[in-house]
Amino acid sequence: MTIHKEGRKIILVVFLFLSLLNIGLYYFASKALIFGLILALSLILFCFVVNFFRSPRCRFSGNTDRIVIAPADGKVVVIEEVFETEYFQEKRLQISIFMSLTNVHVNWVPVNGTIVHYSHQNGRFRAAYLPKSSAENERSTVVIRRENGEDILVRQIAGAMAKRIVTYAQEGNDCRINEQLGFIKFGSRVDLFLPLDAEIQVKLDQRVDGNQDIIALLK
Image 1: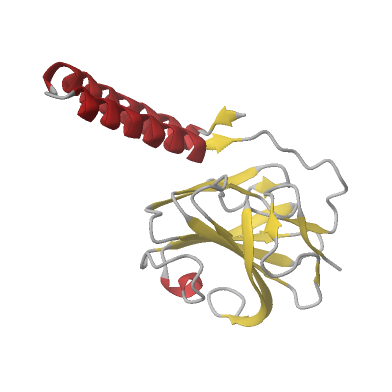
Image 2: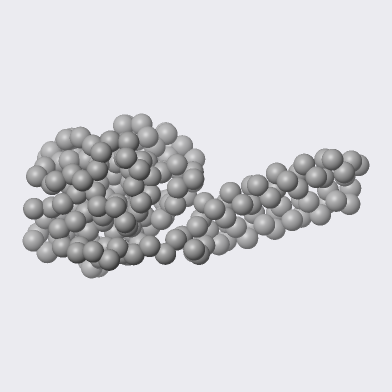
C-alpha cells in the first residue's frame, strides 16, 4: 500500500505542525501529563490522516467489455430510476456509493470508453448520503462513451467535510477500467447513471470495493 499523491503535501504539513507543537510542549509544558496527552492525540490524528490517503494497489483482472466496475469504496446508498437533468435529460438508473472517512477515497474509471463531457459545479456541502446532495452539493460530472456509442455518467460529490474534488478526466481522452478518475478529500459520494436496461449486480446497503466489485452488466 502506498500514499496517494493528493495526500503527500497534506501529510507533510500535518507532520510539521504536530512536530512543532509537541516540541514546544516538551520544553514549555508545566506538567508531563499534558505533554503525554497531546502527544498521544497527535499520533492518533497523524495516523488517521495517513490512513485516509492510503492508495492500495488494486487491479481488476476479469473481462471488462460489458461491466460497470465500482468507482469507489463504500456503501451502496441509492439504487433507483431517476430523471437525470444535468446531461441526459431522460430517465436513468442511479447507483450511489457513499464513502465514509474510513474508506479509501480514490475514484476509479467505471467503464472503458472515451471521455465526451466534463463539468464542475460549485454548490453546498451537505452530508453526502442525503438524496439532494447529488443535485445541490459541489460536484464534478464525467460522461464516458463506450465503443457502441452508449454514454455512462459518473459524478463525484463533495460531502459535509469534503472541500476539494480532484478529477483527472479530460474531454477527448480514452479511459479504461483500472485507471484512476480522481480523488475526493475527506468524506464524499460517487453517483453512476446507467441505461435503464443495465443488469444491477449489487444491493442496497452493500459494501463495495473500488475497481474490484462489479456494479452492473451492460447490454
